[in-house]
Image (cartoon, protein in one colour):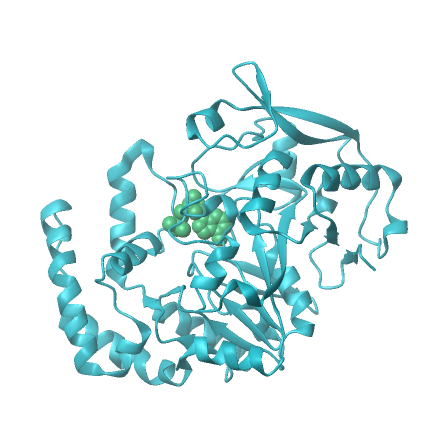
Length: 426
Ligand code: IMP
């Protein structure tokens, strides 16, 4: 059976969790492939809100095996807290599996993340300070400690001592901070995390392949988004992993031949948290209205998001980078009371029009959006359940968006609830 990816096409917070949850009905396994607890997925199920950071959204279904793949960086304390929260609310986590190859986020990674940000001053990236960058940096430097190391106390202690020989020099000599005692940290992690987490640690690559060979449908759940990708995003204002489709392969150990559908989730407008270029960003009442009505504050950090019109130039690029088969548009209802809605179809850079995202970042910073304007629909879309229920103005906007982006819109979300969506392909 083939695999499907659901990923973000903008700068994150597109509402991917809702569609992952929706598609979960047909899936046997849902796999996170990158990022860590910098992600925040909010799901509303039967009026109850679940905010998940690490555990795949599919956990809310009994028939799903939720998997945290090798490409994810895992803070064991956060994982434990999330598992406890789910259990307290009656959700079973017995089937959860975490790759033994996933790297651990340790408290010193979070400390370094905050120190790096402070050191950058005005040039700070606006990270989530969850230790994501430093954990991936240790992985690349071959200094990381992995989930599987937890299973052998002497190896775990040895690896912590090794990595802290390096990190303590950075903490003390570069940042003038106290060193971390590797044995005290090992004691804490082993005593608090080993027993409850050990049953979840597994060879997830093998598990996923077994599922595919048994004709089960596997869903890869992306966190963050295309333009936060370490290689293809608006570097350096990016995260330290690969949310793009290729990351689903490296972050799980499954080759691209298994992928048959790659769904890009896009908000009907754009938002971004943290610093970095954002050509269609608004600093006016329209932008404030998007933030207010769309409740554009981080699930995770509570930060106010920047907001602007839908950018088809970026989306066309996202289609290419990810081989998107279709897009799922979210939060269209946030535009319900707008008199006008706009779509950025091209940029003007130094007086020249371009329909492509310039590869050179300085040009992206100079890009002036060229908009197509559409009359608003001025009515609630909440009750729409089929394409014919949509007002003609909303249909015109979506048709233009689809034409600009170049792949079909398959799903449209009209509200936060599980049932508030339209299947446009039926
Ligand atoms: P980091 O991933 O914490 O290192 O942060 C790097 C950049 O990615 C910052 O601009 C963050 O605001 C952004 N970022 C990280 N995770 C998310 C997310 O889940 N949604 C939106 N932005 C994110």
